[in-house]
Length: 131
Ligand SMILES: [Zn+2]
Image (cartoon, rainbow, N blue to C red; front, side, top):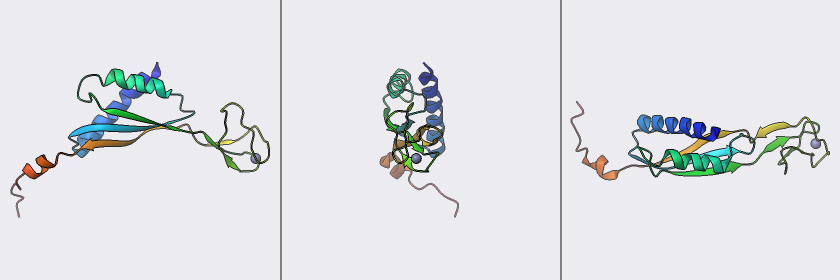
């Protein structure tokens, strides 16, 4: 299941972002999964569950947004959303081949929602800043 390694690399990115932005606790992560990304959303969810059962990202909620396939007709240029990724007749001119894929191949982290502890921020009792 290659989704497991996809999740592993996502977790690495999330940890990096957490460090970069000084996030306290990550609550929720939103991932966009295109119809042609090659990753199955159910398998991503399962992989996520396996890899966040314990450790520093335990209990973080994963939201998967399924992004539809969008193409632009290779003959007449009309953008449309095909119902089937294998047979895509253009609704305007009927062309089946040569469409350009506009979106649907993507798989990326869209948003990381983290808890910012207000108490901690307030507790930082203004250390001397040097001015
Ligand atoms: Zn067309």
